[in-house]
Image 1 (spheres, helix red, strand yellow):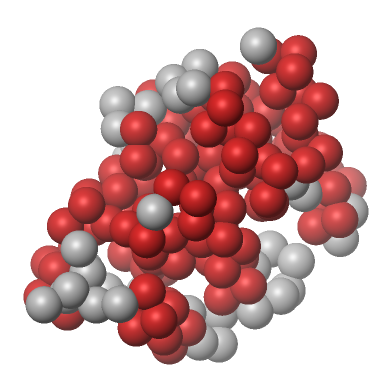
Image 2 (spheres, rainbow, N blue to C red; image 1 turned 60 degrees about the horizontal axis):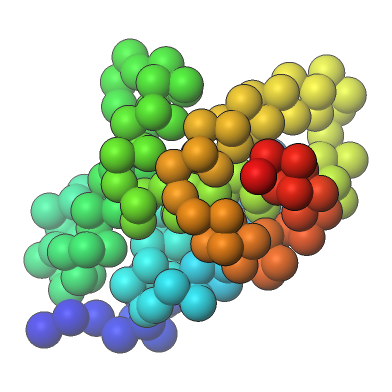
Length: 169
């Protein structure tokens, strides 16, 4: 029996309880934003947004997610965006682009992490380093899916990036 979206939301909230993101906000706010950006693509991708960092940031494993009732498509997307030991970030991005679902999850993650209002709260050096990293990743990610899909995500989570998308097309 598969978990409902509400149950996956609760799972993510409990799993990330006490964690904070780069700007010191409760981490669950980030996964909720990523999930919201993926809602137009269906419940299983919205679930993937909620769970996209659960394997690398908590004690949850892909097997445990499946046993708990997370849909296999959702788990596959989560696994595809999870860091692998020794893997370079750009290699990870290239690996992600082999899966449309994973690419959409990563685009939503990247877009939320790239929000100007969030970046402004980081020290200048870190802000600039992450901006370069995220921009390089967007080039590869955006080349892997339809511009309309990217636009859908950006309208929800980071409309400021729509200008960059227009230049990319």
